[in-house]
Image (cartoon, rainbow, N blue to C red):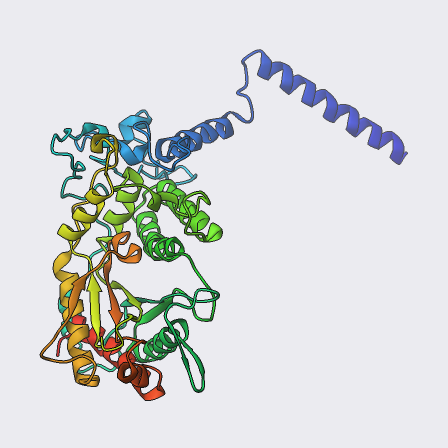
Length: 426
């Protein structure tokens, strides 16, 4: 009996399915998955609108890439996708996002130059301003122990691993730059953390990273934050996600040589369209600082003293132009033009001033040294960025200070309090 009932149920179900299918094919009923197809098409269209072109093997955006396209600010972003896509209050489904506005980022639109110098990107951001720093708020925290809460400091102790930097053989063994600057960075990390800052170390142990690993890590730190703010503002983050993937590739390869591919976007002359996007984003994050720590060495053992290195706008422009040589500059990427030279100089002076206070024998008040030096980690970086060089390892007096725990603590303290004064004031 039960078998006969089961057979009847199967027969009736099959008959109903056949009837519904015939009615659907005849146009009497709508196909059951029509709505799913429509939403799939909308998602694909939204993805394509914000997706960058990855066909250029050198990592330079082409004119068809949103990273290089100009955007008419009078155009409603929804018109590009066929009208208003605001969700109906009665409908359920994913909330659509708008493409990230990129404007004026096509180098082919820049006028050529006849003076043998690189063209120059305009002094305006190619991306929306999504992050602002309330400097007045930090000035109000002068008496707070955690006054640097919300501030990020990227500390970059040079060298590591098989790359020792400067080194000197002493009675107690080899004294290497890589070990001294790491010790200083680790102490500075502790001081800054106690002040409330978030500290990112480009290395925390005796490992070697390429210069381009450091620049990619620095860029990715800010790209990650911008992507979150873009998503919160209902922007499609595909373009930023792609830039982060390119930074990830540079860090994965971790090589300085051009042939290795480890330079990525940072390997060309001038500033490509995509690298400009990174610089424009970094320009919004005045609450993120980059501080490299290195030492000096010279054949003249009498040379001594601290030094702060930086690269201001005019110097970066000059260095990039010097790389052109016999090439046609109008075929190369333009120079970037929105480096905050004033902020770099302010941080540099504060660092030297605190070194004077902590170590007057090394950072003499009568001989302050702020020098502009071509360093990849400063040139390929649009944060407020400087390099602290607290002395010469080749000088006996400097070496005695820098090789001691007390001396390293004083240098680290100078770094931390300079950062605090940069935001909070005296």
